[in-house]
Length: 413
Image 1: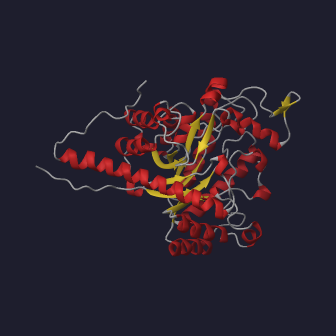
Image 2 (image 1 turned 30 degrees about the vertical axis):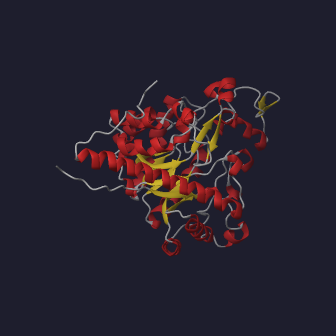
Image 3 (image 1 turned 135 degrees about the vertical axis):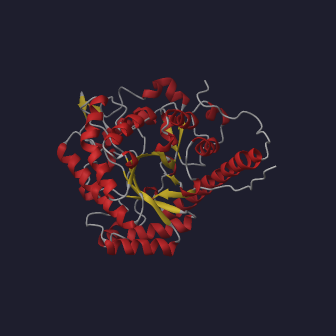
């Protein structure tokens, strides 16, 4: 009888640097841009992280979106006001080596199909600078959104994607990079009633977009940075999404993870449904969109009246909520990834994205134990899933011993 060794394969656990936007004071980092990255690498070591996901954003002095209108503010930890060159890359990579913390990839979250040609060109130019920085740093991917032209239909946006986004993927290919799309629908990006403002929000669209990419020779450049919080927001569950992709022959699209949850408020769903608040939000004043950014933040009531972001480990253990797809079943999430996706776990990143509003403190001393606890939780869950997978699929299978029970089933109603 064959005997196979118990050999659990663990994923790499890290954190997106937007969790603490101003770890380095603005006056110091503006004079010395790469100091912010060095400080975050050292902070990542103190948190017990294997890696950091480096947040890039237009400098606050150049941004077109006021911070007051943003539900989850971004961070320009990677400052690209000046070109990122070989000397900067050597400095950052030396800091990573000294800290023993890797850079998993770079994250840049913008609407890259914006209807305004001038704004769109500005965002595209910045993304190309992000690509250049990623190539110099030796990371393999950039994570972000596709976005949507909010003045055109979804079908018309497929045309926009082909005309405007495929050239960006060709630029990524030239630099040996992959672009990983996070699937947040971004309902609060606009004060109108559109809900899907990032067209790559679900597997059906991912497949359609990938087929366009294949026509242009950039199929290998488009991948998904899967975030289960957005699946919960749209009434989906991780296992069924992964099973759907596998059945369709597209399971390879998932290439990285944000570990961020969503806790659905059943009262909010009862009041508004999964489309969120549609009237009297406060983002319209006197019959038209308010010009005040703080008022525009109320557009996010399309989302926040029915759900709240979860920092992994901060929500109560709730089996009924798991079964109702109203919060993330983290253990099944990690099992489903191993059982249904063609991943190499040891080369896969789990990036904690901290957006739990009540715990988004921006004081290092206060935030440190919060992030330490969440990272430890994520690592423990992943180790449990890896152990279960190896025991069941390697050890027991090799000896012909059946696995007990049924487990969570895809598409079960």
